[in-house]
Amino acid sequence: MNRKEFLLSMMALGGTTLTSSANISAWEKVADKMIAEGIEDTRKGKRKIDPAKAVLMSDIHICGELEDGVPKHYPYNPTSLKLRVAEILSMRRLPAHVLVFGDVAWDYGLEEDYRYASQLLQELTEAGIRVTLALGNHDRRAPFFKVFPEYAKSTLVEGRVVSIVEMPDVDIVLLDSLSERPNLKLRQSTTVSGEINQAQIDWLCEFLKGHTRPVILGAHHPLNEMKNLEGVIAESPSVVGYVYGHTHLWNKSVRIIRPRKGLHMVPTVGLPATFYGDIGFAILHSTPEAVTFEYSSKGFWWPQPLDNPPQAWLSRAEDLSHEDCKFLLK
Image (tube, rainbow, N blue to C red):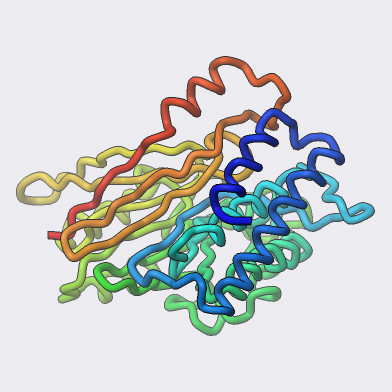
Protein backbone atom coordinates (compact mmCIF):
# COMPACT_ATOMS: atom_id res chain seq x y z
CA MET A 1 0.00 0.00 0.00
CA ASN A 2 1.49 3.34 -1.04
CA ARG A 3 0.76 6.73 0.52
CA LYS A 4 -2.04 7.51 -1.95
CA GLU A 5 -3.74 4.21 -1.24
CA PHE A 6 -3.35 4.80 2.48
CA LEU A 7 -4.95 8.24 2.33
CA LEU A 8 -7.80 6.90 0.19
CA SER A 9 -8.37 4.22 2.81
CA MET A 10 -8.50 6.92 5.48
CA MET A 11 -11.08 8.82 3.45
CA ALA A 12 -13.16 5.71 2.90
CA LEU A 13 -13.21 5.02 6.61
CA GLY A 14 -13.77 8.66 7.45
CA GLY A 15 -17.53 8.22 7.59
CA THR A 16 -17.30 5.58 10.29
CA THR A 17 -17.06 6.27 13.97
CA LEU A 18 -14.23 4.99 16.11
CA THR A 19 -16.58 4.26 18.98
CA SER A 20 -17.60 0.75 17.89
CA SER A 21 -15.21 -2.18 18.17
CA ALA A 22 -15.86 -3.17 14.54
CA ASN A 23 -14.87 0.23 13.22
CA ILE A 24 -11.89 0.47 15.54
CA SER A 25 -10.75 -2.86 14.12
CA ALA A 26 -11.15 -1.58 10.54
CA TRP A 27 -9.03 1.50 11.25
CA GLU A 28 -6.41 -0.56 13.07
CA LYS A 29 -6.02 -2.98 10.17
CA VAL A 30 -5.25 -0.11 7.81
CA ALA A 31 -2.87 1.49 10.29
CA ASP A 32 -1.07 -1.76 11.17
CA LYS A 33 -0.55 -2.60 7.50
CA MET A 34 0.86 0.84 6.76
CA ILE A 35 3.09 0.80 9.83
CA ALA A 36 4.55 -2.60 8.89
CA GLU A 37 5.18 -1.48 5.31
CA GLY A 38 6.73 1.80 6.43
CA ILE A 39 9.17 0.04 8.76
CA GLU A 40 10.05 -2.49 6.07
CA ASP A 41 10.65 0.31 3.56
CA THR A 42 13.10 2.03 5.91
CA ARG A 43 14.97 -1.21 6.49
CA LYS A 44 15.32 -1.69 2.74
CA GLY A 45 16.39 1.91 2.25
CA LYS A 46 13.27 2.86 0.27
CA ARG A 47 12.47 5.74 2.62
CA LYS A 48 15.09 8.26 3.64
CA ILE A 49 15.17 10.32 6.82
CA ASP A 50 15.22 14.10 6.40
CA PRO A 51 17.35 15.64 9.19
CA ALA A 52 15.63 19.01 8.70
CA LYS A 53 12.14 17.58 9.25
CA ALA A 54 10.26 16.82 12.47
CA VAL A 55 6.69 15.97 13.48
CA LEU A 56 5.25 17.73 16.52
CA MET A 57 2.22 16.31 18.32
CA SER A 58 0.64 16.60 21.74
CA ASP A 59 -2.00 15.20 24.07
CA ILE A 60 -2.03 11.57 22.97
CA HIS A 61 -3.68 10.53 26.29
CA ILE A 62 -3.09 6.78 26.22
CA CYS A 63 -4.93 4.61 28.74
CA GLY A 64 -3.03 1.45 29.63
CA GLU A 65 -5.76 -0.10 31.77
CA LEU A 66 -6.99 -2.82 29.41
CA GLU A 67 -9.96 -5.19 29.46
CA ASP A 68 -9.77 -7.91 26.81
CA GLY A 69 -7.06 -5.85 25.12
CA VAL A 70 -9.21 -2.70 24.97
CA PRO A 71 -8.58 0.41 27.13
CA LYS A 72 -11.20 1.05 29.83
CA HIS A 73 -11.27 4.75 28.96
CA TYR A 74 -11.36 6.30 25.49
CA PRO A 75 -10.65 3.05 23.62
CA TYR A 76 -10.19 4.87 20.30
CA ASN A 77 -7.15 6.83 21.55
CA PRO A 78 -4.59 4.10 20.76
CA THR A 79 -6.18 3.63 17.34
CA SER A 80 -6.04 7.37 16.69
CA LEU A 81 -2.35 7.41 17.64
CA LYS A 82 -1.71 4.37 15.41
CA LEU A 83 -3.24 6.29 12.51
CA ARG A 84 -0.93 9.23 13.16
CA VAL A 85 2.07 6.87 13.33
CA ALA A 86 0.96 5.20 10.09
CA GLU A 87 0.66 8.56 8.38
CA ILE A 88 4.15 9.55 9.50
CA LEU A 89 5.61 6.27 8.24
CA SER A 90 3.85 6.78 4.89
CA MET A 91 5.75 10.02 4.25
CA ARG A 92 8.09 9.90 1.27
CA ARG A 93 10.84 11.42 3.41
CA LEU A 94 10.59 10.50 7.06
CA PRO A 95 11.11 13.04 9.84
CA ALA A 96 14.28 12.70 11.88
CA HIS A 97 12.30 13.47 15.03
CA VAL A 98 8.84 13.08 16.53
CA LEU A 99 8.22 15.31 19.56
CA VAL A 100 5.27 14.75 21.90
CA PHE A 101 4.49 17.87 23.94
CA GLY A 102 2.98 16.24 27.00
CA ASP A 103 -0.11 14.47 28.30
CA VAL A 104 1.25 11.12 27.21
CA ALA A 105 -0.96 9.43 29.82
CA TRP A 106 -4.74 9.28 29.82
CA ASP A 107 -5.56 11.03 33.10
CA TYR A 108 -3.55 10.13 36.20
CA GLY A 109 -0.14 9.17 34.79
CA LEU A 110 -0.32 5.47 35.60
CA GLU A 111 2.65 3.23 34.89
CA GLU A 112 0.57 1.06 32.55
CA ASP A 113 -0.35 4.18 30.52
CA TYR A 114 3.32 4.79 29.77
CA ARG A 115 3.99 1.14 28.98
CA TYR A 116 1.21 1.09 26.40
CA ALA A 117 2.28 4.45 24.95
CA SER A 118 5.86 3.19 24.68
CA GLN A 119 4.63 0.16 22.77
CA LEU A 120 2.67 2.31 20.31
CA LEU A 121 5.53 4.76 19.75
CA GLN A 122 8.09 1.99 19.34
CA GLU A 123 7.06 1.67 15.69
CA LEU A 124 8.57 5.09 15.02
CA THR A 125 11.82 4.18 16.74
CA GLU A 126 12.07 1.00 14.69
CA ALA A 127 11.90 3.12 11.55
CA GLY A 128 14.91 5.14 12.72
CA ILE A 129 12.95 8.15 14.01
CA ARG A 130 13.99 9.65 17.35
CA VAL A 131 11.01 10.15 19.68
CA THR A 132 11.26 12.79 22.43
CA LEU A 133 8.58 13.14 25.11
CA ALA A 134 7.64 16.03 27.37
CA LEU A 135 5.30 16.03 30.38
CA GLY A 136 1.87 17.60 30.76
CA ASN A 137 -0.58 18.04 33.61
CA HIS A 138 -1.98 14.51 33.20
CA ASP A 139 1.46 12.95 33.54
CA ARG A 140 3.35 11.85 36.68
CA ARG A 141 7.12 11.89 36.95
CA ALA A 142 7.73 8.79 39.12
CA PRO A 143 5.89 6.28 36.90
CA PHE A 144 7.18 8.05 33.78
CA PHE A 145 10.79 7.66 34.92
CA LYS A 146 10.11 4.03 35.80
CA VAL A 147 9.00 3.21 32.24
CA PHE A 148 11.40 5.65 30.54
CA PRO A 149 14.51 5.56 32.79
CA GLU A 150 16.64 7.08 30.03
CA TYR A 151 14.96 10.45 30.68
CA ALA A 152 16.03 10.42 34.33
CA LYS A 153 19.62 9.92 33.13
CA SER A 154 19.63 12.37 30.23
CA THR A 155 17.53 15.23 31.64
CA LEU A 156 19.33 18.56 31.80
CA VAL A 157 17.60 19.56 35.06
CA GLU A 158 17.51 16.99 37.85
CA GLY A 159 14.03 15.81 38.78
CA ARG A 160 12.45 17.28 35.64
CA VAL A 161 12.13 16.11 32.03
CA VAL A 162 14.18 18.61 30.01
CA SER A 163 15.56 17.75 26.58
CA ILE A 164 17.30 19.40 23.63
CA VAL A 165 16.54 18.27 20.09
CA GLU A 166 19.29 19.44 17.76
CA MET A 167 18.34 20.01 14.14
CA PRO A 168 20.56 21.37 11.34
CA ASP A 169 19.29 24.94 11.62
CA VAL A 170 17.70 25.22 15.07
CA ASP A 171 17.75 23.77 18.57
CA ILE A 172 14.42 22.80 20.18
CA VAL A 173 14.39 22.89 23.99
CA LEU A 174 11.57 20.93 25.63
CA LEU A 175 10.87 22.10 29.18
CA ASP A 176 8.84 20.45 31.95
CA SER A 177 5.77 22.51 32.86
CA LEU A 178 4.08 19.82 34.99
CA SER A 179 3.09 21.35 38.34
CA GLU A 180 2.81 18.14 40.31
CA ARG A 181 1.11 18.49 43.70
CA PRO A 182 3.02 16.89 46.57
CA ASN A 183 1.85 13.64 48.20
CA LEU A 184 -0.41 12.70 45.31
CA LYS A 185 -2.44 9.55 45.77
CA LEU A 186 -3.14 7.09 42.97
CA ARG A 187 -5.86 8.41 40.63
CA GLN A 188 -5.76 11.84 42.21
CA SER A 189 -5.70 14.83 39.86
CA THR A 190 -2.91 17.36 40.06
CA THR A 191 -2.71 21.02 39.10
CA VAL A 192 -4.10 21.81 35.63
CA SER A 193 -2.07 24.98 35.11
CA GLY A 194 1.63 24.83 34.33
CA GLU A 195 4.84 26.20 35.79
CA ILE A 196 8.56 26.24 35.02
CA ASN A 197 10.40 25.78 38.30
CA GLN A 198 13.37 27.94 39.26
CA ALA A 199 15.92 25.20 38.60
CA GLN A 200 14.80 25.11 34.96
CA ILE A 201 14.89 28.90 34.71
CA ASP A 202 18.43 28.96 36.09
CA TRP A 203 19.57 26.24 33.68
CA LEU A 204 17.86 27.94 30.72
CA CYS A 205 19.46 31.32 31.45
CA GLU A 206 22.88 29.69 31.53
CA PHE A 207 22.17 27.69 28.36
CA LEU A 208 21.00 30.75 26.41
CA LYS A 209 23.89 32.91 27.57
CA GLY A 210 26.05 33.37 24.51
CA HIS A 211 24.10 30.74 22.54
CA THR A 212 24.39 31.71 18.89
CA ARG A 213 22.11 29.13 17.25
CA PRO A 214 18.37 29.88 16.99
CA VAL A 215 16.32 28.24 19.75
CA ILE A 216 12.67 27.19 19.83
CA LEU A 217 11.35 26.73 23.36
CA GLY A 218 8.52 24.33 24.05
CA ALA A 219 6.48 22.89 26.92
CA HIS A 220 3.01 21.48 27.44
CA HIS A 221 1.40 24.68 28.69
CA PRO A 222 0.86 28.01 26.89
CA LEU A 223 3.47 30.70 27.38
CA ASN A 224 1.07 33.15 29.02
CA GLU A 225 0.80 30.83 32.05
CA MET A 226 4.51 31.14 32.86
CA LYS A 227 5.62 34.72 33.45
CA ASN A 228 9.09 33.70 34.64
CA LEU A 229 9.72 32.02 31.28
CA GLU A 230 8.55 35.15 29.46
CA GLY A 231 11.14 37.10 31.41
CA VAL A 232 13.92 34.82 30.16
CA ILE A 233 12.70 35.11 26.56
CA ALA A 234 12.60 38.90 26.81
CA GLU A 235 16.34 38.94 27.42
CA SER A 236 17.26 36.18 24.95
CA PRO A 237 17.57 37.21 21.28
CA SER A 238 18.33 33.61 20.25
CA VAL A 239 14.78 32.46 21.15
CA VAL A 240 12.76 32.60 17.92
CA GLY A 241 9.45 31.09 19.07
CA TYR A 242 7.48 28.91 21.46
CA VAL A 243 5.46 25.68 20.91
CA TYR A 244 2.93 24.14 23.31
CA GLY A 245 0.04 21.68 23.62
CA HIS A 246 -2.61 21.46 26.37
CA THR A 247 -5.48 23.27 24.63
CA HIS A 248 -6.09 20.51 22.03
CA LEU A 249 -6.41 23.25 19.42
CA TRP A 250 -4.18 24.33 16.55
CA ASN A 251 -3.33 27.97 17.15
CA LYS A 252 -0.73 30.21 15.55
CA SER A 253 -0.33 33.48 17.35
CA VAL A 254 2.12 36.10 18.61
CA ARG A 255 2.95 36.79 22.23
CA ILE A 256 4.03 40.37 22.88
CA ILE A 257 6.74 40.55 25.55
CA ARG A 258 7.99 43.92 26.74
CA PRO A 259 11.62 43.84 27.85
CA ARG A 260 13.38 46.87 29.27
CA LYS A 261 14.01 48.25 25.81
CA GLY A 262 11.93 47.90 22.67
CA LEU A 263 9.23 45.37 21.85
CA HIS A 264 9.71 41.61 21.53
CA MET A 265 7.23 39.67 19.38
CA VAL A 266 7.39 35.93 20.04
CA PRO A 267 5.53 33.72 17.54
CA THR A 268 3.78 30.77 19.18
CA VAL A 269 2.20 27.56 17.89
CA GLY A 270 -0.44 25.59 19.78
CA LEU A 271 -0.54 21.95 18.70
CA PRO A 272 -3.59 19.78 17.99
CA ALA A 273 -4.28 16.54 19.86
CA THR A 274 -4.98 12.94 18.95
CA PHE A 275 -7.53 12.76 21.77
CA TYR A 276 -10.23 15.36 21.00
CA GLY A 277 -10.45 18.87 19.63
CA ASP A 278 -8.33 19.55 16.55
CA ILE A 279 -6.95 16.18 15.45
CA GLY A 280 -3.56 15.86 13.77
CA PHE A 281 0.00 17.12 14.13
CA ALA A 282 2.40 19.76 12.81
CA ILE A 283 5.19 19.02 10.35
CA LEU A 284 8.27 21.14 10.93
CA HIS A 285 10.68 21.93 8.07
CA SER A 286 13.80 23.96 8.79
CA THR A 287 16.09 26.00 6.56
CA PRO A 288 18.83 28.46 7.59
CA GLU A 289 16.29 31.27 7.12
CA ALA A 290 13.11 29.95 8.75
CA VAL A 291 11.22 27.11 10.38
CA THR A 292 7.88 26.30 8.74
CA PHE A 293 5.07 24.55 10.60
CA GLU A 294 2.56 22.77 8.37
CA TYR A 295 -0.61 21.61 10.12
CA SER A 296 -1.68 18.14 9.00
CA SER A 297 -5.36 18.18 9.94
CA LYS A 298 -7.36 14.99 10.41
CA GLY A 299 -10.60 16.60 11.51
CA PHE A 300 -12.22 17.77 14.71
CA TRP A 301 -14.31 16.09 17.39
CA TRP A 302 -15.38 16.85 20.95
CA PRO A 303 -15.13 14.73 22.98
CA GLN A 304 -15.42 11.71 20.66
CA PRO A 305 -15.96 11.02 16.94
CA LEU A 306 -19.50 10.67 15.60
CA ASP A 307 -21.01 9.06 12.50
CA ASN A 308 -22.73 12.32 11.59
CA PRO A 309 -20.60 15.15 13.02
CA PRO A 310 -22.17 18.59 13.54
CA GLN A 311 -21.60 21.16 10.83
CA ALA A 312 -19.53 23.23 13.24
CA TRP A 313 -17.02 20.36 13.52
CA LEU A 314 -16.82 20.00 9.74
CA SER A 315 -16.42 23.74 9.31
CA ARG A 316 -13.57 23.83 11.82
CA ALA A 317 -11.77 21.01 10.01
CA GLU A 318 -12.26 22.71 6.64
CA ASP A 319 -10.95 26.03 7.95
CA LEU A 320 -7.73 24.36 9.12
CA SER A 321 -7.09 22.14 6.12
CA HIS A 322 -4.30 24.35 4.70
CA GLU A 323 -2.74 26.01 7.73
CA ASP A 324 0.94 26.83 8.17
CA CYS A 325 3.17 29.46 9.74
CA LYS A 326 6.84 30.41 10.09
CA PHE A 327 9.37 31.23 12.77
CA LEU A 328 12.08 33.39 11.22
CA LEU A 329 15.63 32.38 12.14
CA LYS A 330 17.40 35.44 10.76
